[in-house]
Image (cartoon, rainbow, N blue to C red; front, side, top):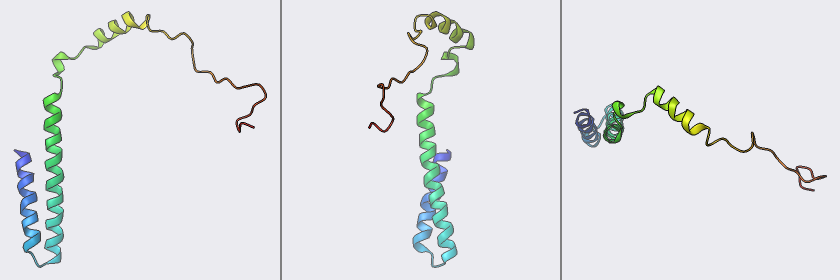
Length: 96
């Protein structure tokens, strides 16, 4: 419902922009049109995100995630503890 309200606000603001002779009304109409279009776009995006979102009941709980971390954590330990930089003997950062 909100989507259609802001779309109507944008269209009415745009109609007012082309029919008014007052600079103050022109500014308010342009502002309401901009707010209406941005609100319409955000409401479309929100509906799109909500349609693809996973329900909360399908998400794993903290306990299940901890159990998965214990199970797969041991198998994926890296071979070295950190990243090391290797420089050639006698070379500096400038590469001379």
